[in-house]
Amino acid sequence: MSVACRRRRFLRLAALGSAAALVGGAPRARAASSVVDVCIDGDTNVSDWWTGSVKPRFEAANPGWQVNVVRTRGGTGNLAIAERALAALKVKADPQVDYLEEFNPANLPGSADAGLWTRMDASAVPAYARTNPLGRDNPFVLPYRGSQVVLAYDSEKVAPAEVPRTWDALTAWIKAHPGQFIYGRPDRGGSGRNFVVRAIHEANGRDPNLFRPDNFSKAEAEKRLPPAWAILRDLQPSLYDKGAYPAGNNPTLQLLANGTVSMISAWSDQALQAIRLGALPDTVKLAPLTDLLFAGGFTFSSIPSNAAHHEAALKLAEFVLSPEIQASVVNDMGGFPGLDWKNMPADLQAKFADVVAASLPTFPSNDWQTAMYDGWYGQVATGVDRAK
Image (cartoon, rainbow, N blue to C red; front, side, top):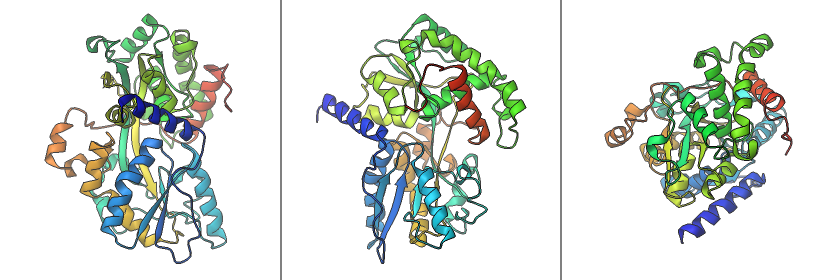
């Protein structure tokens, strides 16, 4: 398949992903079945990797079991699945899901207290003891892969020596090259969300520790967030189409792929995989900021305690932390492993020594995030219809 054909295929898949369709299967009648239903809430690069890498390897290692990959609406679909599982728990019914990829139980308040989630520890998943401590957000999540947001740029338009490496240099570059940079809506994808988070960090002394799950208050938000809105409003006239914010990670990548813009914020794993597949031209390069990294984080798996195939789901959790799959996370997805880097093969440790961060800036996914979304729409992107 030619590069052009692969790129068109990528863009078609991206369009399907943003249409909130279920891709790759659907939960089935499960009586006496030997099928583990896995709901994927990531982009198409994630569901493709699960279908092409995890599924066949798990099935080969576990004869008699199959993995049914279900792609839900990116960003919010697994919340609906979790709500369904909670309702099923209350009536002692089958939740119709065994394993949620990319879902943090903290995003469904009360569900942990209700007993919905399996506690993740070394007794349930032995490999958990080797995971990166930075990814252990709460007792009910399994950190199995990670990524960070970086700058993705077309090196035919932007010389590597001219790529900004600090926030001040980035904002200066955006203003000097009007229409050539864009980031996505923060509530539609992490590449845009973490650009906004970086502005918040910049406006607050580059101190991510000021934003914690346990310190939100309306007064604190009103103090910490408005200076970031001023920064982003100042940038808006210099953005692509003066602020035509794409509604997702993939639409943002498309603007870079077709040459509409020459630089974007992007997830490192998603961009690297798109380059490898030819969906982005090989002239696209990636660069992190050096004064303070864009935020990133780990993708969490979670397992309902009432899953019909609970033991098989735990076996799958152990499998995704196996050396083979964790190496595939790095080599095939361009992501960071869920395992602590010290537990990865020596050759991979050496290869990625320059990008292994001792700490990764984060931003809480609770009321802080809600306040960020509300403030961005209300104070920055005032002309954007939030519902579209």
